Length: 361
Image (cartoon, rainbow, N blue to C red; front, side, top):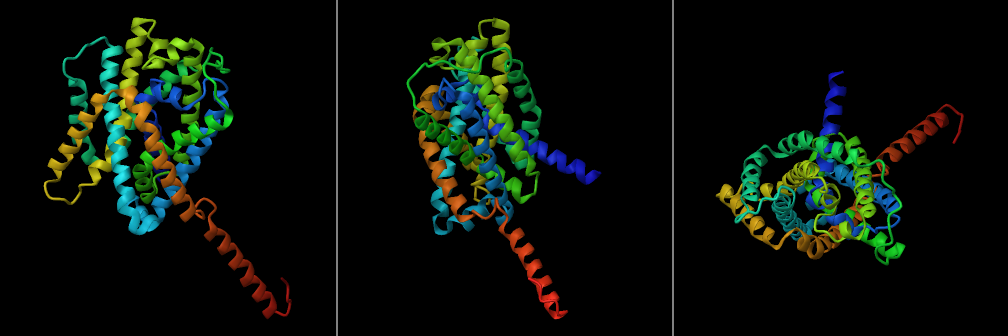
């Protein structure tokens, strides 16, 4: 019983962490969903995205289990090219951290109506991030287990009573939309790779990969249904979902608080590889502080600009990364070793039959 409960707890922790990694400022505000998903017929694309998330998470989880974590996976899959891919992952993580900090500033400004001369709230989040990250994956699991249920509950409240057909706000064909969705999944799975691989090395509940993918697909459809139902005004806003909810000042503040929860979950997961990259180096605390400062300075660009111009580049890098892992480790999802063991068993029984004079195949 204790083993079952421990397994369920690990799966719940991984589920919350993966949902929290994806459902950040750009997601819950609707900004990145409007950027990557069509405004009409989005439900089918949300289903496709959920399926792709599940496959990517499982692939990375099993690769991490095979190679003993994220660093082992990079060395085992990419060999001499591992340092280049590691650098791209770190740069992408820095971009994601900066976008979350920009999201904090935008939420405080638009959601709570506080005009900061200096982004003190983003700076305070950085200080919290710096110290909690010393707990590693356990710290990330704890933060996400506390905050992700709040995010899911809020989205679930708005998931019903709105049409899911969408509106033809902009011209787009199915293939272009599909490519955009694939790019979006690749970006998020790429950024989640360090956490997923390290969770796989610890055997922390592979069922969480599929459950998190289903929850992410549900959230995509629910947020887009509300935004498209509101019309062009919401679709062109910097924070589309806030535009929908913010008609009531009280609900706008509740949404802003939930949005901050989403920002913090993604911020912690995005910072995780940056924190680990300086492990074992001299003056590691100073290097971590410099990385935080770099993310803070990049956040000055603003959430909308980062989502519009930098996210697609990260998505392209993520697609290359995931294709390379899938080609190199294509047997992981189909468990070739399992089939080989079954085949060996059949052959051994056949030999036994021959020894007894049966000669059966």
